[in-house]
Length: 288
Image 1 (cartoon, one colour):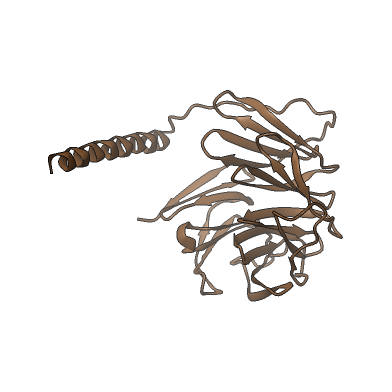
Image 2 (image 1 turned 45 degrees about the horizontal axis):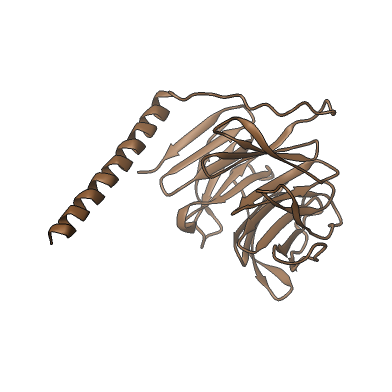
């Protein structure tokens, strides 16, 4: 009993330290007390080079995609480039990270899976008919959207030049955002505001629900996320609004006027939603 009591006391002390540290972090964010470091890309031969995507992997790794067809892996501790992923022939239009792998989609019509440790290509999926615009991974599957309104789903474990395992019917416009929500469920949004939920069955990804983002019908879907435990589907729009859907409903539960410009990214958990826009503004919403 004495040993058990000592063990419980140590556990309580350990959790007390964790919560105190988290409280200090939250307090600094509220005060705006955060250090800034400019992470510059190496000079490119192309003058028009621009960053097309940014993603965090854990607490120390940052990846940036570029219109010069490369992706950089940067250490946030040192601010230095750790790996450069070069292989695409045209701009990298979307990427995702899963475990030790980096998955990239490009305007050269291919999806590549990279080893983040070595920087080498593990596999290259068969080219699509039109350029790829976005990509998302979950488990063994990768979903990629194209300019002709199709979503293709591949298995990551298959050989290079593998054909898609599933493909959707063409939507009404180019795919602007895609989310591989589970190994058999994918959500796709188009440049003209159409949003569809698919489930994979046989050789075709079958639509189980289609709806439009609101209140600005026709505004492009720019980013799609699920909140924690898939409690809400959160959709960012080119009109600057964020719509929250219950998974069982085609109508939004609420619409948040987040920005005056296009929502370009969002992250969410059970209580918080953070969005950022083309106007270099960040909004935070808290539900308690």
